[in-house]
Length: 483
Image (cartoon, rainbow, N blue to C red; front, top):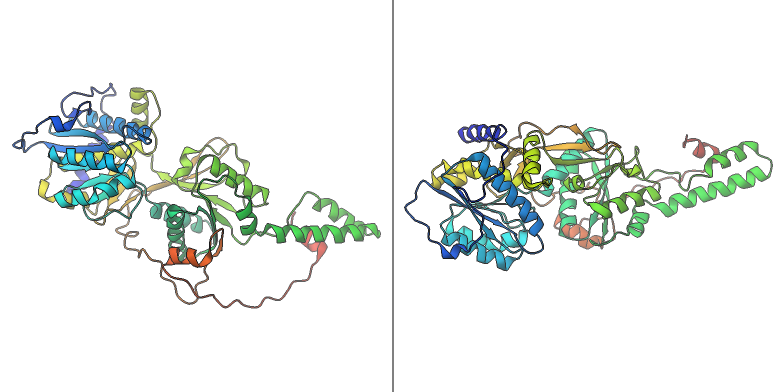
């Protein structure tokens, strides 16, 4: 509990710190303008806590690396701890660059590593830092390389999907569909979703996979929304009503007039759909749902934290949608100071670097032999990004806000919890365990056997379907349900 309290005090102290511009080369900070293999660290500086900050300062991810570095420098200025030293190393956005960077960092006696950003970079240094016993606080969102001593502050898929589906289930949504990319991310979302559904006593009935780089969702969504059958039913109704009207049936003529503006009439079987996308692909996907007559309030669109970077206020079909994001309850100071200092708005990712350096500062006052135990304290921490906790297996948990998309901007409709339940999420099995009564979701856009193997770790037996008596068409009654 002591670690938790001290870190909270440090974080809240930041909020009243001076907002002057940072002096990058003052005591405790080195901006990485020269090579670290050209300097010598005095091994007798026992009071100094050295943090190797590994970021992509050049290469394809340099923009993200710059934002993370800015936030780290800002945190360092606010902390003003002369015993805490940041040493920046450029991973060059590649695994090879990361391997060189970690060798330089280890040769310069770092006590802890913050970064890298990319999962491939983290993978490339994992064995080396484990061999040296140096803890790592990365920003990767992939759990595959995590282990004791190799942690991440990155926002993980499990917690995002669990948070948004739990909220939607609490609001009465019972049947979920997924529109996911046909890659590792899509499979991870599907795994998390079926676990969240079981936990909340709801179902995932449909999973549609699409090529990761496409903006054309027409084919797979036409299948998943059963558009052909739904539209054919309306065409049949229009034809029969037209025939009845031609024979003098005035009521049929009235109903035909009402039906003219509809292409479909029946609802889809799901009442919520999760789309882990952003930007043009997200907008295209939501618009295509609207084209196939799937929209709110009957169907609620759900997202992940990726939605935070995309403005949806002008997308009529998206209004009322929900998505999770890192808590901003303590971030007003951070946002203002970052903008004042660097003349730009920080990305959502940048606040994690601020929290990582604040965490390093808390560790600097501890016995270096027990840093890993302090990092994974059960009580967790309160940072700029809200409450978070790091687990021994390397994963983490954040408290997440739920936003609703509205015409005038996104609004928090469910505030992030101020306290995390102990180990609620990380104790879940990675493989989804289901019994014989489980009804697996329909798969679109991918081989069903392959998809089930990837999601469940096995191919599920086909459930026995109950016979359903065909319904007789009642033309006038069917039209009336539209109004």
